[in-house]
Image (cartoon, rainbow, N blue to C red; front, top):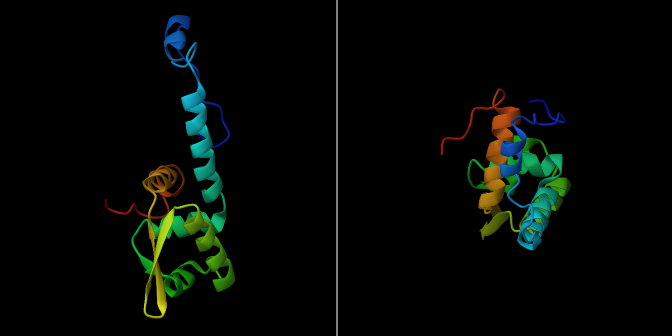
Length: 129
């Protein structure tokens, strides 16, 4: 299904009612999860951050390696890595003069896997996992 198209709604009225598990229930836990999901998606919602997360899903890299591989200039790279680190999506460790980054968030890794499958599988082979 192309992006922006509504999902098909099929089934009988009886099965459609069964597909609405939240009708008549307390929605506050769902609302709390929606806030968490929104924060995750907001942290990921920048082309450079998505490319960084894609690369970091392959392993740990130093800033210089990321700059060379992705073509993101150092000031922008540092800014976007800072956002990802502040939001808890990546870890950073210093070794000598180099800072190495790795993907920390399981949720971000899972979202990246879905995005890869839906949007990029014809461009880049998936990372074995």
